[in-house]
Image 1: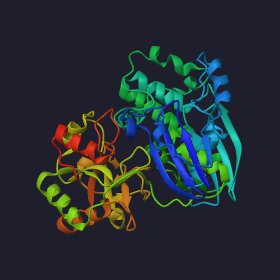
Image 2: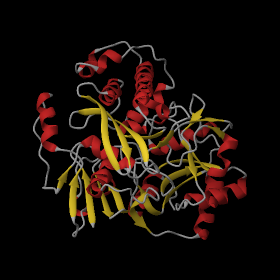
Image 3: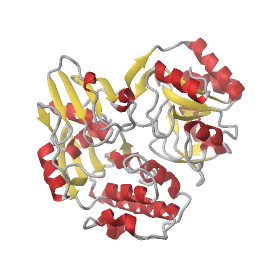
Image 4: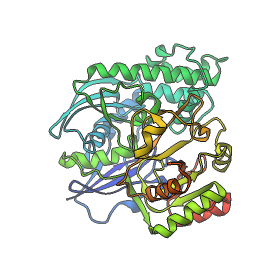
Length: 444
């Protein structure tokens, strides 16, 4: 049975195609339309033949909340076989790809229909919602409101707020803004507050509330879902006694996978996040060319194999750089980003413990304390959002790192997405050629 899952209408539209329990593809619309976080799905991505087509939320229920909030009624663009709940699809995307038979799922986002935080009990392929918080109470909406207040773009730049928080102090008690729609008035409040202190304050509040949710969890196996699951700093505060799974696309794009999975309600065969557009994979000679260039020039791009599902480049649509160099400003200039923002290292998994203290993770979902002196991949607070590249990783990044280590003795590279600020990652070879010409960066 071919099941199609679709998320669209608010931000970051996506489509997932399942064949039974196998994930055939999972793709972001933005990579085709070239509009960052495009809320509208490119309908040409829908396959001609399928058995069911499924939507990631319930439009009527969402519209009741929209009317309550003084917003306009919004109808889906087409008919679907099934409409599932917004937080239900978040939870399903996390649970059905997780390695756990029994677990709790914590979903935190800005808002679904009415739910803003939910906790689920999952066992034997069955899901049951056991706790929920509803609009206007919303950790995600408040985080987005503070993001806007400090001059960034809400629903897109929250990760910049998270990075800025390390430069500030949590001077402000923002908890009262979680209630009674007060987050709408954030722009008029605290007019003299420094942006970095506001960022630190909302980050501190989110971390506190996330840890409080653990008391509702029966299991030590935890799945984090919803857009707020991308907050790797907060994720890292969860005690080590919990085993944690986070889908690489835990936000609304990942809910397209959840919508498709809810048709049969069976565990999926999750293998890796390389599920998008594919281009030719080059061989070992190509790897040597990449490392030659990195040794000589310090930076290059890679567009190779299938692109990643989720917002983070994991080796197939990456901009790589030599972390031993003082190269952070160079890469920020290429990507046209703020100078204070950190970069992540990708490291051969077997060398992680020699360079970092923290959870090993393949998808950059936690931060770890650095035990090395490579400042280009270390944030101001001494942490890094590490990608552990496992031995069975199918990305070209694994052989590149192996070759790099053999030549230099350094088992890591700076790894960031191949794009510039405000634009989607390069998807096709044409995108890569355009990037190379426009920004004078060699792309392999």
